Length: 136
Image (cartoon, rainbow, N blue to C red; front, side, top):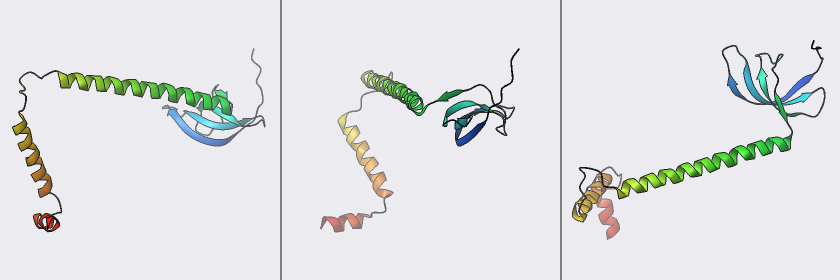
């Protein structure tokens, strides 16, 4: 048979809600002082009034820093790996000609670039007279 224990707590700082459920409870990251002891980082579910809670995890500052470092180093590694994979895929697509697509000759490419330049110039607030005046 479990014995009910009395304890006290004070939420010193509410950092954020990690998730919520339809019953109004939310998993939160807070800084909490338990039984008058120095405050620690605390992750647990709380009711709406912060009077009832589930079992949770408390972390010292150094443990929280390590947790964040672990998460960031893993996330960074994954982001870097994903970027490398995307670059490999782009490079592969560039090397592999698409079916039905012909290679453009340099003259077509030059005409296309001039057309884009004319379109960009036409939409620009700079007028032809401005360009001629600058050239003089």
